[in-house]
Length: 409
Ligand code: NIG
Ligand code: FE
Image: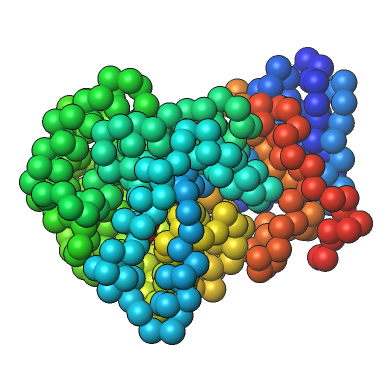
């Protein structure tokens, strides 16, 4: 029996990918901005309007679960220095790195930061992204961290990409500040104020040499939990340091980076149900051969997500589709695994598993259409953007060029 008429029906998809599998011959109907039908084209309801996917790929709107895309200034000079031999930590010790971006971000107004971040969000949308996480962490005073999160709030209100805000006051100890006093401010002043103002859902900490220890990280994340902020951890990125074990111990929603995660850390993440957010663009942009053990994580039952890490220092990229390619070529994931990594697993990493990352009846119609014949062809397009259209809540919010210009098979 055909169901009630829908507003919009997606027909002619080469494949519809969701929940780890690609299917053909499937139509997707939308009513009132919500997915109302997913099933065989022959059983599809009547529609006011149809969208011809024309042999392309239909996926859930993609989710980028880890970005630092609100910042001012740039670090092109540091990138050049690194390419010719300097290391990230050396540059940071000399006053560059996060501190450089902190100075530029402190000096910028909310309006300037919104104007700088907007095109980055536009670029994410062009990759098919409809939900993205954004962190603070370049203000590093109570007022400047709030300013960054205010920018996230404004962008969320004006831009079709849905934003999830994370407080990352514990990104690094700002220069000329006493470590203990700074941590006291993060825990005693910033977290309560951010939570009270409803400016963030998550609390993150950079556990690393030159940033924070495991014990300091635990203190910050526990304070966040007391104020209703769910934990996330920048863990084991540049050196092994027990970050994954900490993430598991505090019940973190995600542990991110993990290039140097230990065997015990992998097992702890699996037990805790923590998502591993892998950022292969960061290692590559840092000129490092470090690779997160994606296969071991997946084998242990840890959901693996992928993200851009978009930031001015370690990965100046908004190209989430490129991360699919790196997830395969550098981390050994399969095409279905990298698609899962930017849909249902990424949605879980940002607490949006109930509304994003899957094509299923009753969910918001956040959808992306790519001019590729199968899901295997999406990561195969290395740095290309075969996005034809993006829909947010059933509304078309991005249109790429036509299939004739794009189809490369
Ligand atoms: O995810 N690791 C810490 N934070 C960022 C880098 C921030 C920066 O260098 O500006 C990251 O790699
Ligand atoms: Fe990061």
